[in-house]
Amino acid sequence: MSTTTSTHTIAVIGAGGKMGMRVSNNLQKTDHTVFYSENSPAGQERIAATGRTVTDTETAVTDADVVILAVPDVVLGAVSASVVPQLKSGAIVLTLDPAAAYANLLFKRDDIEYAVAHPCHPSVFVERHTPEEYADTFGGIAAKQEVVAALESENAEARQVAEEVIRVIYAPVIDVHWVTVKQLAYLEPTLVETVACMVGDLLREALHETVHTVGVPEAAARAMLLGHTQVALANTLKGDNPFSDACLIAMEYGRESIIKDDWKKIFSDDQLDHVITRMLHLKEIVR
Ligand SMILES: NC(=O)c1ccc[n+]([C@@H]2O[C@H](COP(=O)([O-])OP(=O)(O)OC[C@H]3O[C@@H](n4cnc5c(N)ncnc54)[C@H](O)[C@@H]3O)[C@@H](O)[C@H]2O)c1
Image 1 (cartoon, rainbow, N blue to C red):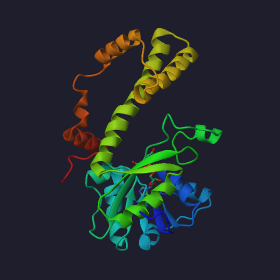
Image 2: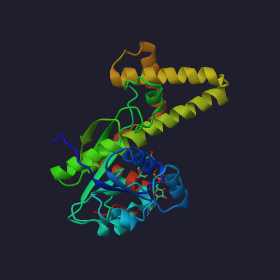
Image 3: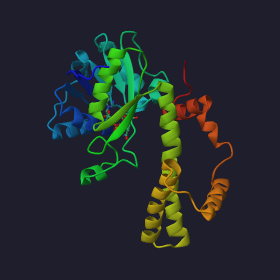
Image 4: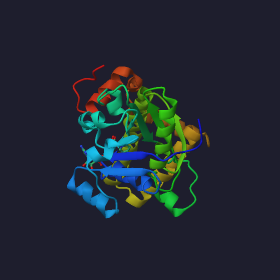
């Protein structure tokens, strides 16, 4: 792959939303020609407040090399059905979550490339130096992160253009990992939303019980939980230190009390379809 980057015409649809604003903030700093489309008045106000100009979707996408669909996943089918027919041949449609691509909801044209790119968010173990890097837990501002992406075709040129744009919208980016759409769907939702985000919410609930049911002062419980969360992750995922023998027994008790025996079923294709149909309010995934 060549390391030279070129300037592209890029359209951001949904530019006033959460991701739309984030990717637009980074695109605005580049030499790319960028058009921002947004259909809600509140989103349009957010765009105007940054000094960017809102363009109607038809104008925004006409000459676009890359169209970023930063709209909610549940409307991606309808939005792609109205946008994709207007694109020039060879354009890249870039979505920011694999669910809709996995569920075959995107309007298809043989002469259009389809890419998905999801930010990993900065690792809990990433080296941070400045206050800005510490504050940037989401990524895309100051803390370095990696990205996982998928391109539906094998087109190397399209992949290079997509990677150039991906490295800008999620900057600063350490690396872009290319996988299949299905592998990306197993990463998000299964690995990170179904498991990691759920476990994070379980920690929040456990803290609440410790404070409100048991009566431990919140500051003490919070300090104990946050420090031990770092130790738990460093020991299990980084191999920093072994757990004590007593801790291993408590962990086994926790697993018996909290985890269902068949929990690993979430890593099967029928369960992946199940969670994605639930997320996108679909009856079924049509293949
Ligand atoms: N929010 C996150 O943390 C996050 C993280 C990674 C990926 N994503 C993905 O990013 C995408 C966008 O999610 P979000 O959370 O930013 O959504 P959001 O609801 O915050 O923003 C979506 C924006 O799209 C606009 N919009 C809807 N239909 C439109 C249309 N037809 N034309 C123009 N604008 C339209 C809405 O008005 C809104 O401003 C989704 O695919 C989501 O899965 C989100």
